[in-house]
Length: 431
Image 1 (cartoon, rainbow, N blue to C red):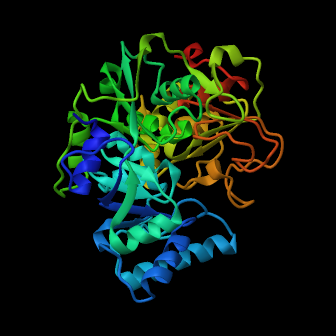
Image 2 (cartoon, one colour; image 1 turned 120 degrees about the vertical axis):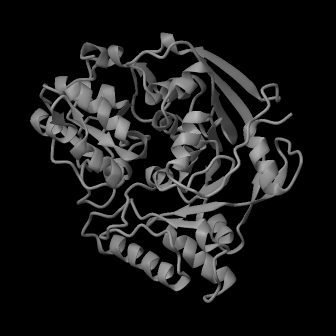
Image 3 (cartoon, rainbow, N blue to C red; image 1 turned 135 degrees about the vertical axis):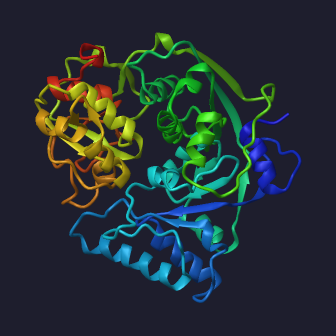
C-alpha cells in the first residue's frame, strides 16, 4: 500500500515499494531553472562535469527566465545572457527567451501551459514553488543549485521519501472560496512548519470540483507549510488539461486510499470564509471580514500564485463597473494570460477594458515582477511603508522590496474588493 507520492517515487527509482524515510535515487523527467538560479546551476554543472560536458537529456531541461526581466539592471541582463550562451552551446530546445516571441513569463505557470508537466513524472526546479506542478499529479519539488547541477549532468537525484499528510476537503464549494482561501486556511491551521519535509496530499469532493488552475494555487503554497511537495491525484480535468498541451506519452499513477499516512485532516469547505494572511508569515490566518479596519495603500494581482487566467477573471468580476480607490497593480503571469485579458469578456467589455475603466494602473508585461522584490525599477516594487494586499505567496519582511511594507496575502476576489474600498474587504460585499 503506497500513497501517490510514494508510487511516483518508487517507479522513478525502479523499485516495487518505497517507505517514508528511505533514501533513494530517482530518475528525473524535467529540470526547471530560471534567470536567478540558472547561472549558478550551470556553473556547478560545468565545474563538476567539465566545460564540454553535455546535459543528461536536451528534452529534459526547461529554462524559463522570469524573475528579473523587465529592468535596466545590468547584472540581471548578464544572467539572461549566461543562459542564452549555455542554451546555444547545448542546443536546448526549451528556452523561453525574453525579448522574443518564445518568451512566456513566470516559470510555474508557463511550464504546464507549454505541456512540460505530465502526471506520474518527476519534476525538480531551482525554485521553491516548483511544488505547484503536483496539481497535475506529478512529484514536483524545489531544489538548490548544487543538486540541480548534478541533475543537469546525470538526470538523477537522491531523495528521502517524505511522509504524507492527507487533507480531505469535502462539502459544497461556495462561489467566493478560491484555492487561495483554502490553502491559507490549511497553512493557518498547521503553521509554516507543520508539514516540514512531508507530502501535502489534497483530496475530497471540493478538490475535484476545483479547476486545474485553482489546484495549482493550492499546491503552489505547500512549501509555505514546509512541505517537500504538494500533490493532487489526476482526474479527467487533469488529463484533459495535459492532453490539450502535449502529445508526449505519460502514465498517470494513483495512490492506494488505505495507504498509511502521517496524519489525515478533514474539512468541510462550505464553512470556509474569504481570508487573508497577515504580516509577516503565510500562516497568520484571519477572516477578511475581521480585518476591515486595515487601511491599504496598494493592491497587487499577479505571480505564479495569483496571476493566472482564472485569477484575473475573478478580479474582473469584482471590478466590473466599479472604481479602485488605491493604486492597483496587475501583472499577468504569462503571455497567454495577457492575451486572455485582451480577448475575454464580461458582457461586451474585455477584462482589460474593465481594469482600465476601474482605474487600475497599466497592465505590466508578464513576469514575477514585485513578488520577489527585484531591482529598484521593478514594476510594483514597494519603496516605503505601503500597506499591500497581494495575491502572491509570501509576505515576509522585505519580500516585495521595502522592509517596512506590510503585506497581506489574499485571493484575487479579496484583493480586488479591497482595491475598491481601500481597506481589507470580504469580497461577498460585491459578489
